[in-house]
Each structure stands twice: as structure tokens, then as C-alpha cells.
Image (tube, rainbow, N blue to C red; front, top):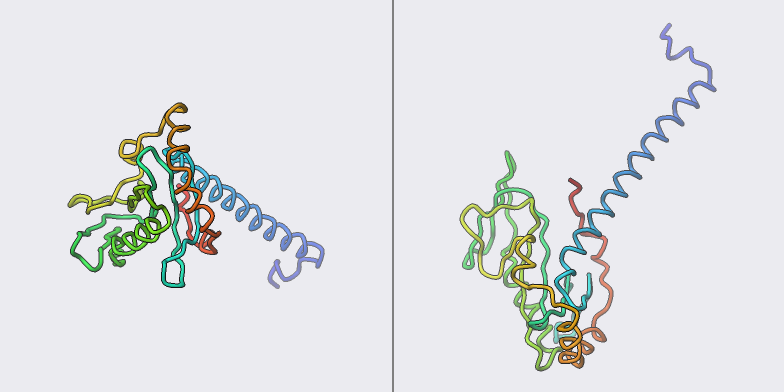
Length: 203
């Protein structure tokens, strides 16, 4: 007779509980690491801003709304950030409808994000009045562009050099100068349900 089948019910119950506990602890550790990685990633982006909105919907001017990963108030005005956490070598260009990702044996494509970025910038400009608005597609460190970065595309480590954080004295003047425009954006924005749908890779 198989020795396992001869185990008493109490032993089986303990085995099942141990397996369930191990699975639960593993899930909890991964959830914590995912949450910590997400908080660190958000902080690395919002640190360049005087004020920021994360995962919001903004009116598109046609009765609908657009999801924005980040809307930042910087010394240069408003900045819309489209965050992409893609692993592998990315081959994309301004005139390409789709960008290709090569990640080991995997190969896949995704739609050129520039058009969607232009739509988000236009939506924010309609709300911001006189405040200038820019947009960037920002990729995490897991991505590489062997042929060079397309227009309006940044690696996350270059964000601080592109938009240097304002010192406290400048920050207060920025807030005052763009107060009306920024308030218009904030009052028009709403929380987005996509906030939890974007997984962040855990190193």
C-alpha cells in the first residue's frame, strides 16, 4: 500500500494547511514586492514635478475621456507621461504603425504610442489655457532601443535630465504662475479604473 494513502486524516489536514500557508506567504511576499516596486516607480517619475496626478481620466473634448498615467506640473508647464514597462529590444520609429519587441525567443508588436500621446496632450491643452503642455512616452529600464529612441520617447533614467526638478523657491513661483491652468486640469480629472490594471515587473 502506498505510504501516503495510509496517512491519518489529521496528517493530511496538516499537509494541506502547510501547502496553503506556503502559497499564501508566497503570494503575500510577491504582492508586497509589487507594491513597493510600483511606489518606487511612481516616486521616480513624480519627483521631477512640483505637483502631479497619477492614473486619472481627463475629458477628450468629444464626450469621452482619456486615461493618463501621469500628469505633471513642472517648471516648463504640464507634462503628460505615458509609462511603458516593456522588456526586450524595441524597434520603433515615428512613421511606423507598430513597434516590434524582441525579448529572447519572444517577438511581439504593439501600436505606436505616439498618436495616443498626441491625443492626451491635446486634451490637456484644451483644459490648461495658457500653460504649455508636453508629452513623453517613458520606458522603464527593462527596455532597450538598439536603433535609437523615437521622437518624444524617453528612458526613465533620463527623465530628471529632461525635466530637472525645481528647487523650493522656483517651485512656489511655478505653482503661482500656473495656478489657474493647473487647477482647471485637476478639477476636470477623475480617478481611472486602469490604475490597478498596469502590472509593474518585480526585479
